[in-house]
Structure formats: structure tokens, C-alpha cells
Length: 437
Image (cartoon, rainbow, N blue to C red):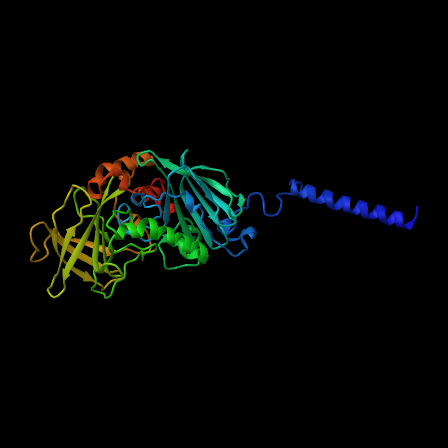
């Protein structure tokens, strides 16, 4: 055999060996292929998503929806403004949501690993996707999913479909973005036991300029302009009518009542509201605005919220406050007159307040209530609400409860955006509530 033929044979044999080895590796003969198969939790207890080599990458977030699939009806409020305080989120909504007319696909906003899939019901599914070691997408209210845990997905892959709500005749999805390198937003505590705390952040801030403008243009056309023209648009008030709003209201001084305040005593029916939110803003379209949300927890899983305008008098002690409630429908509520003081001597400011239906109280009585300023933890985690009040209900049932009680405040049924009504259920249908944030 000539030297050339010997060399050719050796090359062919070498290639065959390499190919066979590669094939055996791919089918798992030598164990899980690189980047596939289950990633074992680290000895330290750290979740694998923070060390998975597939996630050694720079994230590049895009919209998880096709904006042409969204409803253009202003009363639907197709894009949930981030940070909005009201409805079922008096504390300030820490994610966004989208309303669709038809069943629509939900796409992976970037490459990543499917971390967890939670089936609360067969058609009410939550999915989380890590895009790198510090950025995670959180999707809620999928009707079906096309991925499995530990799958590697690529930007634009269909991960599932939005969920239908019969009472609204609309489809919806919630989308949150969690940044584990951010220490200033509302907390995501799913991995707190492993020493990993993340912050919910506005997803729109992570889009490229072109997509951000696409969202802003749609928001301005279908929500902001109709609101400025006098229409009712969910997620829009004189104090908050931006795509992104501060989830923690700005406080100008230690004596400023602005903020989200959580009732310090145990819940009782007909008692003080569990959350009081006050915002003082100088707005572009409405000038100086004093806006409040009076939110009473109602079992099983929602807040009965009233919007109000407020006025204060800090020249007297105790300071005075008046709430004038805003009615969006036939039901009206009489104003409340109150006195208050703020104690800033401790770790967290404490608000002492007492209301009357008739006139300003002259001094505090045994009926006064105290509130503490919310932290980065969700108020549901800090409020003293008995566990037995939380019910495992399907969202369609929850939606009916919301409509029955809240429609008088907000007007006709089609004006309610379920994104703002059902969100609390996402946090408290699990036995360990702290794991849901």
C-alpha cells in the first residue's frame, strides 16, 4: 500500500473515532451532554441558575409579546404601568402586564434557562427564565406552556400562551423582571434562604431604544392620550399616568406623610385599612397633585381600594388631613377627616392617624391606628393578616369577586383591567407565601 493510501486510511479512521465519540457524548453515553441535563444544586445550597455555565452571558432583553396582538381599547389598558398604586396593588405594582383580544403567543425575551414552572391550575401557570446569572424573567397567568424546566430557550422562542378571562372576554399575561444586582427595588425573595435577593425592576428600562420607543408610542396613543381626553383608563390617575412610576413614593422630609403605610395591628373586618398610600407630585399635565389610596384587605385575596385626593394642614399639631374620595361609578363615599403625626425616632417611620366621618378629631383617642412605612418586602409579607383568610381560588372566581365589589368604584365592567385586580393571588396561593415574591 502506498504511503498516500496509508495516510488517507489513517485520516478516515481518526475522523470516524472523533465522530463516534462526539455522538456518544451527545446521546449521554459519558453522562449529560455539556449544557444539557439537570444541573445539580451546589453543596452550599445555592440554586444552580447562579452558576450554570450556560448563563455566562450578557443579557439583551426584548419584548415578550408582539405589540400588534395587544388590545387598542383604552378601557382595557393594554399595558400595565409599572409602579402604579391602586386597585389590587395599593403598594405599587412591581411588574407589568399585557391585555390581548385573542389568544396570543408569549415569547422568550432573551436566551436563557427555564428555572421553574408552577401549575396553580392546569390553565394558570407561572414560568421563570434566567437570562444570565443576575437577570430573570417572571411570567404569570399562562394558559399553557411549551417548555420544560431546565430547557435552554432562545430569544423569540414561544414559551406559552396568554390566559383567557371570561368575565373580561380578554386574554392577559403578567411579566416581571428581577435583577439580582439591584438593591433598590421591591424584593424578590424566592431564593432568600440561599442568600440570593433580587429586585423587581421596570422591564421597559432594559429594552433597546427602538423597542422602548415602540412601547411608549403605543402607550401614549392607546392609554395616555385617551386619559388626558377624559376617558377612564386602568392604571391611570392624575398622580400616575406614566409608563414607569416610582413604586416607593418620594418623601420630601421626615414629617412628610407621602409613602406606602402598612397597618401595624391585626386585620379585622370593618377596621382600619391595611394599606394607606399617599403621593404628592408636581405633574406635567395636572400641576400639583395630592393623591391617596385607601386599601382595605378583603378575604380571600384582594384589596378593596378607593382612590382619593387629600389635603393637609401641617401648621397645627397634630397635623390634619382630609380624604375626598374619587368615584368612578354610581357609588360614592363620604370624606374622612383625620389627624396624624409621624415618629421617625426608630428604624422605620411610624404614622399615627385617626379618622372621623364628621369633623377633625381634637386629639388622639384609643381608636387611633398606627402604620409603619413599607420596606422593600411586599406588604402582604409584613401585614398581620391571619393565614386562614387566604383561600386557594381560581383566578376566574377571584375576578368575579373583584368585579362584584369594585365595579361600583370603577364603573362599568369592561373598564376593569384584571392585571390590577388579580395580582395578589399570585403571591398567596402557595403555602409558603415568602417563596412567591
